[in-house]
Picture 1 (cartoon, rainbow, N blue to C red):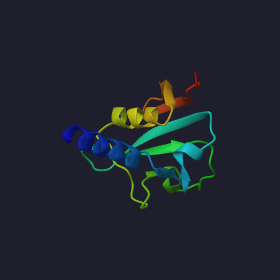
Picture 2: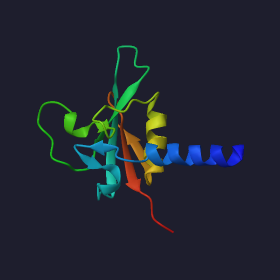
Picture 3: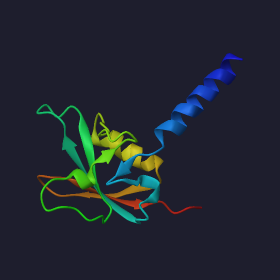
Length: 116
């Protein structure tokens, strides 16, 4: 009985965490993009937490990055402990890392995984 309740609880949490993450109002699952570019944005001066900026070809303004910020269903910026946590998050949505590039700012090029 405890195992069943635990399984249901874990399933619900995973299912809830994979819903309604958006960039510029578009859910990740609806990007329709084969490739993405991800950049981290430190939240504080210590850089211990980050937000993700995701470029999938959406129109953006010349100033600011609000159109690239990854947000939850309530419009709150999603925070990660590191870029690795962010890359693992995108892996759950079917994207795989192809190549990091850049010097001062590192960009991560990702590609949608092929379905077997």
